[in-house]
Image (cartoon, rainbow, N blue to C red):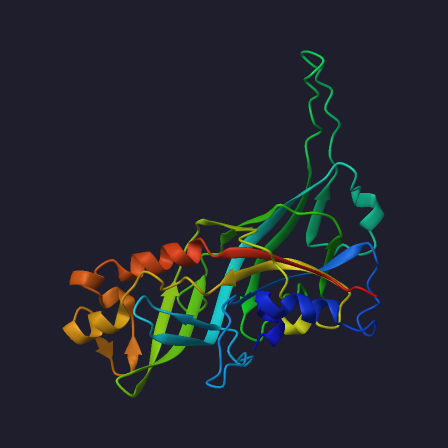
Length: 281
C-alpha cells in the first residue's frame, strides 16, 4: 500500500525529512524511475487529524467512499524527451539493455532572422514493455530497478498494453459500503490507446517503496477524480446500476448511469500524473 507521503499536502515534509541513509548506491546523476498510483486527497479523522491510512481512497459524485484493494495496469512502452545537454554515453553503465537512448542531434537549420534561433530537437529515452505497475508491484525490468538520467521531464508518453483477458490492460477492485452492505467495484478493460503522464499539479508525495532513495521520478495514476461525475448511490437505488452478488460493474449501467463506464474510462485515461522527489541532505 502506498505510504502517507502520497499526500501532496504533507508529502513535501516527508520528502525533505528523509535522512541521508539507504539507497545511496545509485549514481548521483540518476533518478530511480517508477510507476504507481495514489491520491492527493487529505482525509480527516473524526478528531480532526489527518488519516494517513487512506492514500488510495476516492469518492463518487454522491460522496460514496471507495478504497483501492487491488490495482494492476500494464503499459506497452514509455517514452521521454531528453534535453540536448544530456548525453546517453554518460549513462551507459546504469541504463538497462531494455532502455534505448538517443542523443539530441544539433539543428543545422539556418535562422530566418536575428530573432529566430531554431532549438535543437530533444533526445529520446525509450523503455520497451510491457511493464506492469500497481498494488505491491514496484517497477522492475528483468528483476532490476530502473534508473534514468536526472533531468527535467515534461511528460511520459505511453500506451496501454492490450494484454489478454487473464492479464488485461487495467484491473481495479475497490471496496465500498452501500446501505451498510460491503461491496466491491470491479473495473477491467483492454486497450491500446495512448496514455500520457504529465504534471497535474505540484508533485511532492512519494510512494513508500522509494522512501530510501535520494532521487526519484515517475508516473502515477491519480484516483481522486475517477468517479467524481458518477452518482453511484442514486443509480443503485433506482436500479440504473445492478449488482452481481457483491460486485458492481459499471458496464451494467442504464438510464442515468448508462454512460458511467465511459466516464470512468475517460477519467482514468486523464489521470496520469508525474512525481519527483529529491532528498535534501
